[in-house]
Image 1: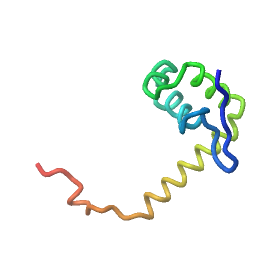
Image 2: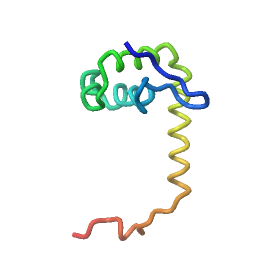
Image 3: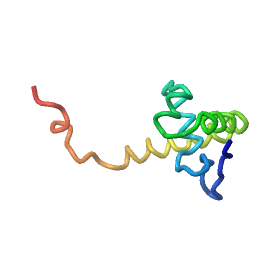
Length: 94
């Protein structure tokens, strides 16, 4: 089984991949994908997926805080960047 990598200043990820533990957690916990689906869709072994989930459960507080911080950042970014299309242009014409 391959181990998780930790990038100093970065996020833990699956060894040999750019996929983070956080990615796997979101796919599994929030989107409801099974470990088999995640492995098949992202060219991972089941061991990789389960190792990522085990890492998450061992470091749940830190990773949940990281997920919340990322969500807050994205929300703030969406509010601060104006849409390219005006509201009237963004709605489909009927």
